[in-house]
Each structure stands twice: as C-alpha cells, then as structure tokens.
Length: 129
Image 1 (tube, one colour):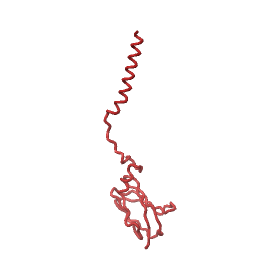
Image 2 (image 1 turned 45 degrees about the horizontal axis):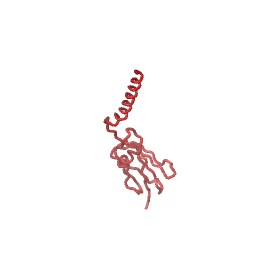
Image 3 (image 1 turned 180 degrees about the vertical axis):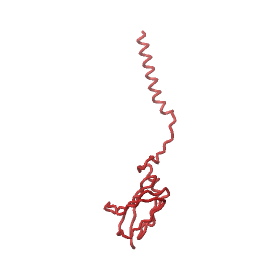
Image 4 (image 1 turned 180 degrees about the horizontal axis):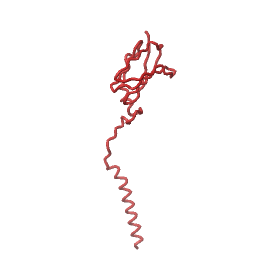
C-alpha cells in the first residue's frame, strides 16, 4: 500500500515540476535586448541600416574629389575597383575626409568606410563628363 502512495506522489511531483518548468519562463520578465547593434564591430543584419545612414559620399558621380563624411567619425577608408583591386587605402580620423580621385580612370568603385559603429561599403562613380 505504501508503494502505491509513493508512486502516486512521485507522479504528482514530477507532473507539477514539469508544468512549473513550462510556465515559469513565460511569466518571468526578460530584460530589454538591443537587437540593432551587436556591441562589436561586426556588421550584421540588424545594424546595416543604422551604419549606412551615418556615412555619405559627395558628390557622386564625381570627377576630381569626393568627400567621405560620417556623423560618428571615420577610422579607415579603402577604395576598390570593379576587379576587386585596392586602389586607395587611407587612415582617417575626424568626421570627414576628402579623396583626390584625379588619378583614377572612369569606372565604378566600391568605397569601404570603417567607423566606430561598424563598416559600410558605398558605390562611387568616377565620371569626367
């Protein structure tokens, strides 16, 4: 008879613990998590639009000079041609940098800008017309 009560008690306690385990995470408040910035310099899906809006290339298309500006600051600027060859590599500091593109032939280039918030790549068109 005591074995039957022992088994019944074990089943009831196991069932109760199972339901508490299911309900407790639902009822427990969770702290707010910022999903737009991962906290490091990795550019992820969540912060693409955030970093993109901080960086501007003007004028575009350009013929002689291009100003790279960022409201959060600049760390580094690299320019690549359509073949993927790095044609310019400049350390940067401050909020803006002027690129002298007189020596570059007419083409489309990719400008990779490193900021304290993350990296962003923008398209630059060099046109002499």
